[in-house]
Image (cartoon, rainbow, N blue to C red; front, side, top):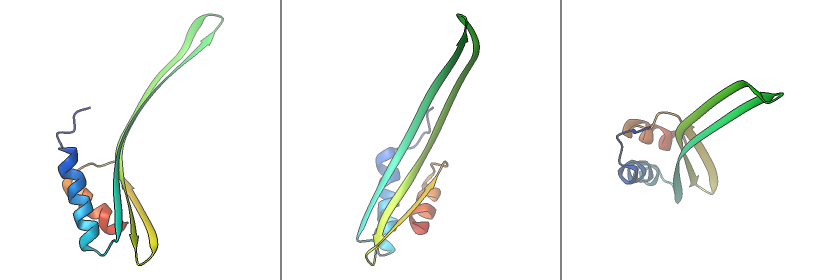
Length: 86
């Protein structure tokens, strides 16, 4: 899955926003997860499934308290919105 985003610029945008909003600490995690499952019965495939997810999360410390928010939409605008929410 090619998102067309530069991960470094994306993270820098979220971190800058968190800092501007008063965070003394912030981190961003971009996560892509893929899984496959095969169900067999007496040697025959009964079910085959594939799943994937993609998203990011922002953790912050503001005034000594932790905050967290996440989203499956990895866009520059969403980076700022999620940093604000965290």
